[in-house]
Image (cartoon, rainbow, N blue to C red; front, side, top):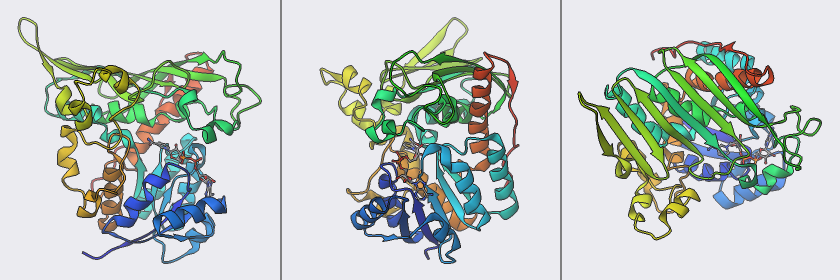
Amino acid sequence: MGTSLTLAVIGCGSFSSGFVPLFKAHPLVNKVYVCDLIQELADTAAQRFGVEVIASFEEALKRRDINAIAIFTQRHLHGPQVLAALAAGKHVYSAVPMASEVEQCQQIVELVRKSGLTYMMGETCYYYPSAMFCRETYRAGIFGKFVYGEAQYHHDISHFSQKFRDDLRSAGIPPFYYPTHSTAMLLSAVDSYALKVVAFGYEDREDDQFFKKGINQWDNVFSNSFSMMKLANGGTARINECRRIGYKAPSSYVSSCYGTEGGYQFNNAQHVLTVKTPKGVTLTDVSERVNPVAVTENRHDPEFKQKVANHQWQWNSFAPIQQAEADRLPASFKAPDMPNGHMASHQLLVDDFCTAATFGTLPPVNAWEAARWTIPGLIAHQSVLRDGEVLAVPDCGDAPKV
Ligand SMILES: NC(=O)c1ccc[n+]([C@@H]2O[C@H](COP(=O)([O-])OP(=O)(O)OC[C@H]3O[C@@H](n4cnc5c(N)ncnc54)[C@H](O)[C@@H]3O)[C@@H](O)[C@H]2O)c1
């Protein structure tokens, strides 16, 4: 099989360091460049991973031999960068979120539709085992009609990197400007999208400077936000985004998903499925299927619950429910030094992008899905600002069949 992609990774922060070796090792990738506004970061990444530096994002867009761009810049920068890369005729992989403005999401969808280029949002939670379990169970009809579900991304500001917290202009980003971990899990599971949203915010009360007017670039004062979304399939999703909260791991999770016939509940490594019977329910503990293998292997550890709550064993170990997906990964990813991360999702995402961009197929997390998982959050923040006004969520429609 020939290689097809020459790819420039834009942004050499900590997150992209887990992806550069995967792009480089993928059999469909010919060459990888790295780039950062901070030259030292680009030089260090190039040396560490044995790739070349490209001087700037703009230079990468001009280069005819580069046909793909992978954006790993700060979360509020993605929209305009994705649009510029698509306009320059490049396939685009972008870390989440899609964009910080509704219009940018709509423009990305339009550019992808017109150009036929690949856009993929690297939503790690699409492959989180709990999302995969709910997706599989819903598609098998076991839940019946979707009724109600809860998903959240809880990431306390004290658990972010020092580098992230040092940038006070950006660290206090409105929680709902980063909604896709939680929306992706639940909306992909029940194959639907939001029509309306109502949301409330928690006005931060701590003395540090993160969520303060006049400090962050959005004048955002909310550290936590909570929403209810009315979905097109008639059900309701409760989606929360919390950045000041006494909780750690797993940071993104589906806590419940109920249908007319069955339901799923999760708490600290326990995953339970109930299915209605004429007299009650059957209850099945599905934890061994949904937890990463490393979690199950350590279930007799005397500190098991503490360690799970502190994020142990939930990084690069596949769960049995992910195995069928893991089986299609290229042989080069099976080398012991190949990185993976966020519930073993990184390798699957890189493979999805390289395959879609090479063969012109639609990646699972395509522009249409990315818009349906990003826009409800942006509108939810507007509802927070209007003290819980019910707002309509614009929709970009279904992805075309390719
Ligand atoms: N689970 C997940 O999906 C997940 C986890 C972590 C981070 N992320 C996302 O990944 C992205 C990167 O995160 P990070 O922690 O590495 O951030 P970071 O701030 O450490 O790194 C971003 C880098 O991009 C560089 N950059 C910005 N604009 C640029 C430009 N025009 N040209 C070249 N370089 C530019 C910056 O100088 C910086 O070094 C963020 O968008 C974040 O939301 C996603």
